[in-house]
Image 1 (cartoon, rainbow, N blue to C red):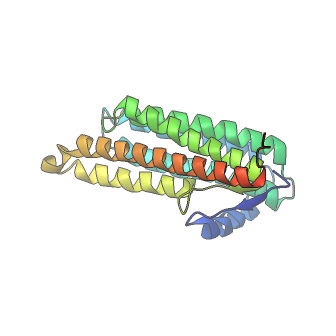
Image 2 (tube, rainbow, N blue to C red):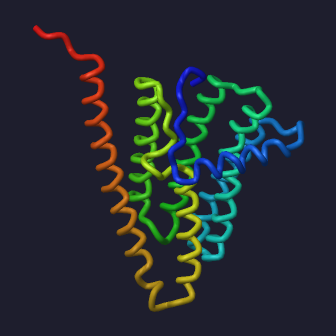
Length: 222
């Protein structure tokens, strides 16, 4: 990763970068990058547990939103802290971040699948596709030498914000019985639509990458 070019193209990349650097500069020296990585994992576990507990009370949606913020803080700040302190761990951190991201995605996806909003099989399919798209990004970075932490203008930060907004809408909708009746249908329909879009994005990206590779490294004839 230290020789690769990083391109953060998602919508909130620049303001997030400035905010993270400001936060990292103010953290006590006793706090290390690994502590923040652990905090991000704890946040993801909290998100998954809160979503699962919404089956008993919808107030857990607010807890899920709070834990998404905790997950963002730990998951996004660990690498920034290392860079600000000039103690970056390119290979170790790169490996650890990918393993942690996969675990966090799985835990949150299972929690959503155990909620009363989205079917478990649909949620797990979303997890598989999300991880497949993530793996594709990492493979592209290895092959083309450019690391892009997003597809178009959407990255992990935007996904968290969309989940927080969805939590608020669901919590408010619970107070409207006429609306609440349709929430599971709408939620599952939205999830299925996301599955279709993610498959389409992956297919387009896969085809484009094969075309680029054919031009960069053409197969020998005969």
